[in-house]
Length: 297
Image (cartoon, rainbow, N blue to C red):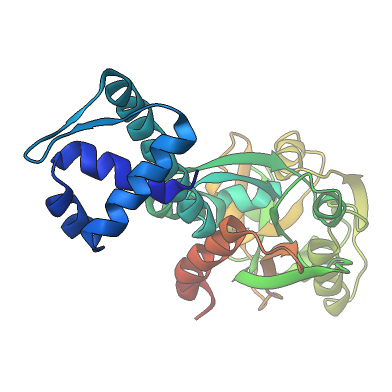
């Protein structure tokens, strides 16, 4: 039995007229009659009572019609689901992100993706930059938002956002009285920084900025989360040079001040497996590219 036999049968059962059914199916009437007889022979029971003037379903035919309609409906549903998956419109996407992305790119990306592709379920994991390539290789995430550069063999990387650096100070610090703070003013200050092994894309520009001002910063404490760094600043453990978007993290005890010097730009990039042909991943990349035009123009 083939699916076309079910379609022929359902159409005839709906029309109860061989001529009209054949017309709907775009075939001649004799082949339709032949296909129905073949189906009845294969099933071992009659589907229709036939006279010269009428065609009507047998009791067995009525039951078979209900089940056949259900099968064809399930088939249409399966085809529709397959098409949606192939277009990246349904499924699940697991995203890794560095904590700082939550203060700039992550919210608008998630908002845009959910608006355009509501059928995809998103699972989020807060990860360091160093963790993301490994999680990608292990298949634990599908795509990541990280601070480049990072060792990314077998991965595709695309920068989507760049920003300058700013200064986070304890609110009692004398430098909060200045509208802009020169980097040289930070000589001798204890610094709170990211470990280089975790985020070289942040660590190196900060150290370079200080060295250009003629000193190497005194690292008093390292932390891998933006929230922790700001909390340590609030606790007067030191100062921190951070991405400018972190100013959205308003915490009691912390004051942000722009730096007088032009600072290096620090980036956020997408990372995904180079050989990943997932339509959902590609759809996510497309959405991010659309909204990233305003950030990297």
